[in-house]
Length: 212
Image (cartoon, rainbow, N blue to C red):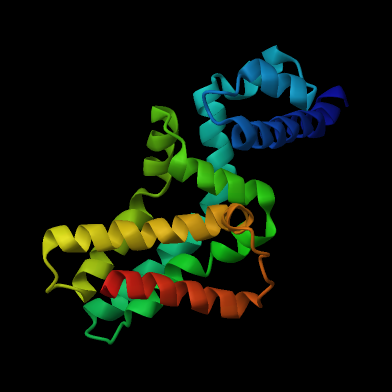
């Protein structure tokens, strides 16, 4: 009986640790957050935190995998479908490729402050650990997206393509991770918009950035 009771208790401890870690990483960055601080915020024993995750690096990776993997998998699936259509000789507009990337992630980022902050952290935190985790998580999606867009824009000089690509995708990162902050800094209210319409607007912005 005791062992059965321990299962939900263990799951609860792990979930509290991840929730606390997400808040602290987003608020203080990777280097500014310690395992001891996470344990205190989660009201768990530091030894339990080490037992479940081992190191801060492993905890951060577990957090990102748990929060972002479903979104990334949906993105990869959509991009693979675009690649299959292109391989079969079908017409694949740039907007379809961008929709496969943006539609799974933008609604989640728009409705969850913590997820939005974590997404922004993965793309902006200077820590080598964060860069490595982001590179690993987004490896397939990044490769699929880059190859697809390049196939659709073969006549653009390599250097120019690179900077168009970085600039357009950078705008997407800012939109998904920092829209509220950008609005606050500019001193303008952030208007509500139906999600389908917002996705179309963001796709258009990124597509125009890529086309130049």
